[in-house]
Image 1 (cartoon, rainbow, N blue to C red):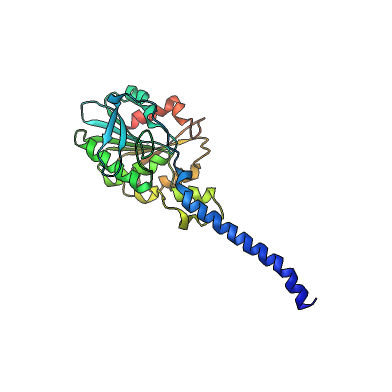
Image 2: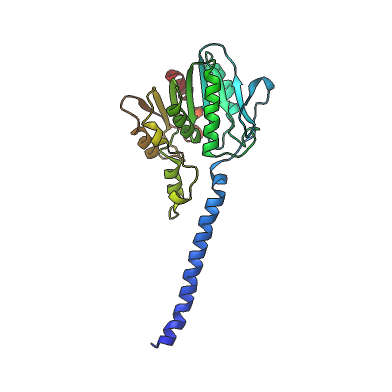
Length: 262
């Protein structure tokens, strides 16, 4: 075969290769630009009574907190999932934890809070909320579900929480994203990593990890990997049978486990 014929045959292959490379780079750029739209799904607030709302004093946004005030030393601060209206927990939490003041943070963009959510912005708001609550309630249980488990474990590593409860927690968001988007350089693209494992080793207060038996979102292996990063004797892991990622709170065992850990 002549060089001329070979050259003619290779041109379509080179064009196809160039197209594939460009398409891949465009997909990478799209993931980078729109990644937070794939992580955060802001929800409106179902409970809207003025007496249940607190406006957190932060400089660059109006961040709202659904609350149930209660006198006494105990409080519960809750961080929800990426598509959760945390205010819906208020009735059940108020009944189940009658001796606790309840604080449910609406992330930026959620439940009437202004601004846009990001890992660092949420974490700053979480610390501001903890410091506000700690002024009147020195015994604070920090609770995080799904995405919020990453917020909770980092907060408890930086503030004097009395208890830590992590519901359907993950080792890191980076691990989950790499599993979801195989073939993409997630390590280089991801801005919000929620590396819970990094903070778990610094936790010294009693910690409960609660997993769903049939969690279709967060693999059990991710939860178990996080569990291994806690110091020996600090954490326990409980699995609620017959539940999935979103149905775990419907089990009667859910509030029982939370209550036993407070």
